[in-house]
Every structure is written in C-alpha cells, then in structure tokens.
Image (cartoon, rainbow, N blue to C red):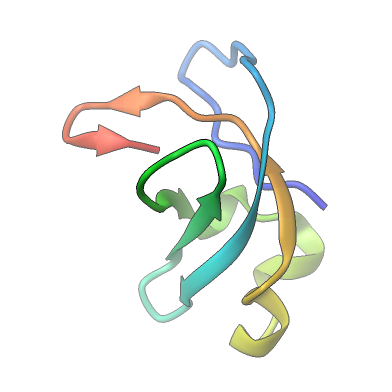
Length: 77
C-alpha cells in the first residue's frame, strides 16, 4: 500500500517508507512518521490508496506506507 504525495507537476522523487501515526478522518488528513525526518509528514486523505480511504481509524493507524515528499507553501507534505 502506498501514500503518494505528488507535486502539481506530477514529478516523482525518492520514495520513503513510514508508518501512519495519526489519522483525522473527520478532517480528511493524517500524518506519517518516517526515519528520514525529524517531524511527522502531513498527507491528505485523498492520497491514501482507495482501499484505505473509507477505512476505520483503527485500520489506518500503524499502516506501513511508501510516499514521496515535497515542500509546499507553509510546510512539507
């Protein structure tokens, strides 16, 4: 399964691996924790694989995921 944060140009960078540590389904976003970064990485619910988008919080937390990282105004996503 893969969480992929894509830039507007759809370019792909290095893939990172991490674990979903927080999911706020009511708000439509969550955070991934990876070994490569000092802070958690934000992601939108629409970036989740389709099979996880409607899952309960307990099924999303602790999922191992692969993701791209890019900077956007106001932070890293």
